[in-house]
Length: 510
Image (tube, rainbow, N blue to C red; front, side, top):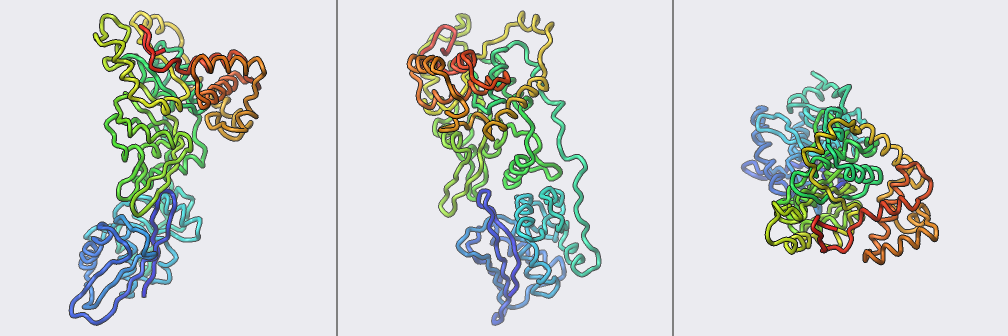
C-alpha cells in the first residue's frame, strides 16, 4: 500500500489527509474506486487521472485500484486531491519514489493533459506544512504564494512530467522566487483631501479609525456617504505582519488571493444589499469564508442598510461582539475570524429627501420611521457612531475649494499615534474594551459619572450603549494625546449616539 499526504481546511483549522493507494488482483478489467467520504469533485478525480495516465503513455492494469482518503469520517471536498492521488498511483507503478514524496503535503488539480492547475488554500497549506516539518508540492503558478509562508522546501511543477523528471534526477525543479516588491501601493487611491465639506463626518471617521469603532452615516442621496466610507482604509494604520498573514490565509482559503502578493492593505469589502446570508456569513457545501471574514482586519461597508434582508443583517450581531463567525453545516462546523470594522450608510427615508420640502414625498415623516425600523434595535445598539451627513451645496463646495483640506496621510498620523497609545496601555484597540478593563482604563470622576448617568437616563440608553460611550470618549482622549477622559470628550462621544430612536425632525433623524 502507498501512503502520501494531502490536507483539507475546515475554517482555519487544517486536517492532514492520508491518501492511501492500493492495487489488488482478481478482476478481468480495471476498476478505480475512491472511498473515504469524498464529494463529487473528488470522485471525478478518477476520470481525470485515467486521461492523464493515457497522456503519459500509461494505463491502469486489469486489477482493482482503491484510493482511501483517511480519516474516513472527515468529509473531503475539492479537486486538489487530484495530484496526491495521481502521485500515489505513480508510486505504485514505481515511477515516483514513495519514500521521498511521503515527506510532502501534496495539493493540486490535474488537467487531462497532465498540467497542474491552480487550487485554493496553497498559502494556508504551506504555513501548516512549514510548521509541522513537511515540504509542499503545489501548482507551478502558486509557488510564489507558497513561499510567502517562509517555506523553502517547495516543489511547484507546472506539469506532472516535471515532477517525474525532478525525482528521476533529470531536471530538478527550482525553488520559486519571491518578488522583491509584493506590497501594493495605495498612495494613488482615494484621499480625504478630495472630500469637500463634511467636517463632522470626517471627524467621526477619524474617531472610528482610531478606535476601531463601527459607524452609521445617515443622509440624503449624493451627500458623500459612500465617498467617505471608501476613504476610511486610507486613514487606518497599516497591518502588522501577523495581520497580513492571517488575512492572506483567509483569502487563500477563499481562492481570492493574488498569487504574486499578500494582502498587505486592509481589505475594504463593499456588500450589495441583495447579498444572501451565505454570501455575508460564508458557507456552501465546503464552508467557504463570507464577506465578514474577507473583511477581517479591514472594513465591511454596507450601503443602503435598510434595504438588506433583516435576517441577513442579524448575522452581524454575534461576530461584531466575538470577532469570529461559526458556520454550521450537516457534516462540518467551520470557524473563521471576523474582526471587521462595520461602516454602514442609509438614507433617512425611502426617497432619501426627508425634510426637503421640494423633494420629499407626501408620506413623510411616517415613512421614515417605518424605513428605519427595518433595522433591529440590537444591531443599531452595536454601532458606536451615528452621524448625520448633510448634502453639500455648490456654494459650500466652491468656498471649500479655496481652503486647504487635510490629506489622508495627515489624519492617519493622528490615528496611528492614538492606536499606539491604546496598544501600549491595554494591548488592543478601544473598540474591544469591556468588563474590568473598561473600568480600569476609562476611569471617570464623580462629576463625569453623574454627567454620563444623566445623559443615559434622558436618552434611554442601554448598558451596552453606556459602555460604548465610554469607549468612544477614551478614543477621543487618545486623539488629543490625553491620559484621562475629560468632560469635552464625554460630551462629544454622547453626540454620536442616537436619541429617541424612531423619532424624526424636519431635518431627519435625531
